[in-house]
Length: 389
Image (cartoon, rainbow, N blue to C red; front, side):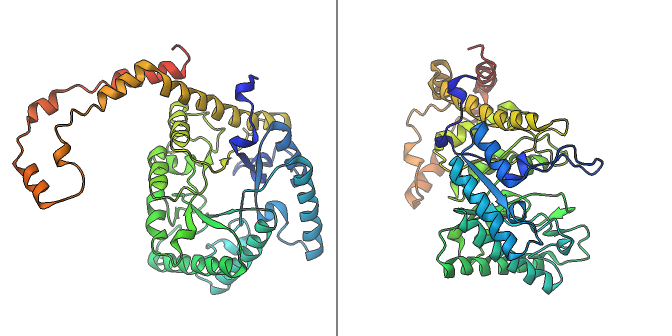
């Protein structure tokens, strides 16, 4: 591989234990790969050039581990981090696998389940901070319903809010340097999941007691599953100052959660996303929440991980070329040209400005007649991506 596409620590590429450790099970098929112990996963990620590794609590420590077993596992994991130089930027809690959470965790109807979810999350936060995490993700995979007759959605959101407020206070009380990131998803594994989109999560964050502590972890597949534009969602999160983390993968619209290798389905969408992140100066982790195809063995898993990072770096270079391309930039300048004639009407409202704008005469037909050259721009973009310019 070209040195230009070799991952380096400054790229901040990360994978979860659950990504390279995915055994290839699906609803209709048994596992095709052996489980990958956490220490082995750390060494695999170091081998392929990743910067960091993230985990759910039970990716690292089994849910039924004794305190002594927990301490031994964490000791060995931290030793592997030390030996390889990998870091843990993000951690999260598994509140979706165990049958106790079949009706949700923070939003379950049973108050005992809700209390257990808080207990489990506090312990998981302690574990994440112990390993160095600065971001803590909340994916509410079971926070929802199959039938809305079972749960009032307003009550569900009230319970969700109460839990996050509690946990924010816990983090502050412990003196942890930690931010929370909500991960929206519309469906699967539940029929309908609360806080289904980035916009819904942003509205919810504003209702919390500590909104500054809570941001977003948008995922390519989750917005795309619902037929939404992921780039727009990321831009909205960034504009709000809430892009605390990001999950990169790929997905065909309208399908189940596929978690394909980054860029595997729609390279143009992936390019525009990478270009946005690089242009605005996003400095967080580039986390690949994806899985190798079920057809792959361990060697294929390594190729999958290398491919995610290589694709990002190729698209980063393409973004640089796009920004330096004289013809593309001249076309963009033409599309966005401003002769200054509207300057008097731009900016903050004033009564005088509003009156002047109401009195101005526009040539409506001329406004509608102008061609915008977007077809040419899109083809130039396509040509650049395919390497013919």
